[in-house]
Image (cartoon, rainbow over the protein chains, first blue to last red):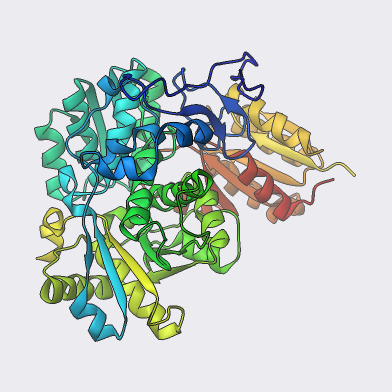
Length: 415
Length: 125
């Protein structure tokens, strides 16, 4: 029976996608898209960017009752490793359109020496550098490029601080799509080269990612490129949310107490919070306890921290943004209100760290645990130290740091 | 009491979006499609807040902000100005604030944020 709520932007009814059988090519239980601002619903069968009415990001909504009937958490755990084993809860309808380079199921590594040194009982890092193209961006771009391909897109464009460009170039190449990338001219060299190597047209911008976003947006409008900027299309978040599913599974379907996450655009933080809500609605969690979400930024670009301290709903545009952690050099996220909302809801916090403490923590992670983290990932360890000093985290809590990428991409900084 | 908000913007789509959003909250929108027209409207009408695009067909938004701040109409020296722009040049936010704008917002304009920013200066009628 058709759900009366499923109406597209013109008011016409549309049929939510349904699981047909385990042998079917269609597994996704995607039902519709919903505006995070005004609640307006849109069909997933059309190409959408963000809500044209209130210009807020669109969220993918699934028929979780249907998913519950067709799959359970144990079946998903038995499937071959990778992001797409969660297909019922991802937006790509036809498995033939799943563009994969082996993303997802990154290791959750215990940090025994660091844990001991910091006086903690349970400290882990989710090491996203194990993804294709060496960063967590692979997850979001795998989902976005796959869905774009499914909806007939032939050319994709992105503004990037670095890793998202490399990931988009790789997945676009894999999908046979044209790729155009705008990145700040001081983006790590590895990101520029990997993008060009994968055949993308790369434009280096004398400015920040916000400047690159403006140029990408103009080109997209003028020439019909599909803009896969953070939160300006609905599906990158869906790839990123799988980090939340994987954490739940790794902790035997009980969530950790604290997640410390570096925040530029914030897709991962918002995505994981969405994942936890979906898992709870599916009845797959052992209890309803959610983690406290910690947003980590650099003190040279900390719009979320400033807004959090002011208890604001939106961020002010951060002027003169600067930090060695290029992924954190985002003066204002398009989804700032979602990031802040999720931090508040989780009873979490936001903390800024210095570039000096990032570099010290990067070295510490490498020397003590053998993990050569990206500066953004190292920032989470620097933040943890600050939170311990504040007494905000307790020694016995289960704490997860996120290393979002490989330090190998940033050799020009670490040298 | 209705508050008058002046929006200086040459893009009719943005103008319509903002008009719909602000009128839904009970504000009255005054419109100017060029920088010079915007300055004239601000000087001749009772205005409570100004929304200012930067890329305008005659003088740019920075110059508009500077002229408003230097205006002989004293209210304009301190009237709240929110810069709203999709500019793609380095340091636009810094330049907007230096020119006298109070807040910088980038396009696309999130309507909920616009409401919050406007209400912070001019309470909803």
